Amino acid sequence: MTNGQKQQLIRDRAAALLADGAVSCIVGWRQTRFAGKTAVCFVRAPEDATLLVWNEYTIPLTAKYLADERWTGGKAGILARGCDSKAINRLLRDNQLEREKLYIVGLPCEGKADERCRPCRQKTPLVYDELLWEEDSAADGGGTSAADADAPGRGRFFRADEVSALGIDARYDYWEDVYARCIRCYACRNACPVCSCRECYVDMHRAGFQSKRQNAADNRVFGVTRAFHVGDRCIECGECERVCPMGLPILGQTQKVIQTAEALAGAPYEAGLNAEDENFLGKFDLDDKDAFM
Ligand code: SF4
Ligand code: SF4
Image (cartoon, rainbow, N blue to C red):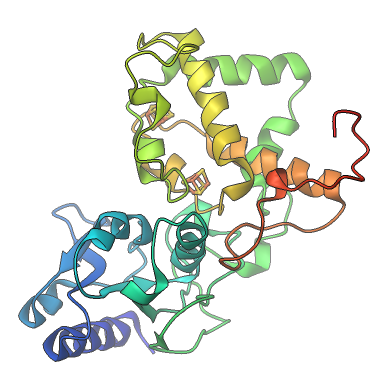
């Protein structure tokens, strides 16, 4: 099936769901005025379903946009790929969404034109009410390929591996340079489906340990705090890095947290695979070896 055929299926289904009153809106993607750039949109009338698009540039995550929709009546419809479904699971786990107020239209993804999508292992959604088509495992939707996902420097933790390959001093300089360029716009936090606190410490008048000043030291505090706060809940979608206006390679931080968690546990770990799992770093046992337990 071509992207054009899939797009038509999406539009037809969205129009039918809205016309039936099954959902009050459909959260999907529309074209922007920039070639190769789509944006998340809310479609609320059947005749507007023709705005919805599906192509190699339908990259932004849809799930976080639902956070405000939970306060409205009716069910919200959402177009969800594998990454969106992991985000939905995380938002459900964090009590940011209610499953009975969602109608999830699952869209198996063929890969997108973004290097951060390359290691994706979840092309078919994990949670959905209906699936519009089956996954085509041979498909390559634009610059992504399952075949090279495990090649050196192109695997699941590709960004963390780049930094790990540097010596210890070079690594320090690397992060110094990154956070000297951060403008603390908080786009990374805003786009992240896991950063869902209604009030973030960075917006407080006095956080106590980080000022409002934009300087390298306070930027570093923000970067490290964000990475550990998201930490084991990160679904590896890459949205934080994708939206950074300064082009900072911050995905390496959360990849490193997950990579280290896996190494410590000696077991595979991936957030968002269901809506019930305990957070890896939040688990403890009275038999844990650390003396403070
Ligand atoms: S999006 Fe980039 S520039 Fe903005 S706060 Fe995050 S790291 Fe800094
Ligand atoms: S990759 Fe970035 S945006 Fe996505 S869940 Fe992890 S920290 Fe949040």
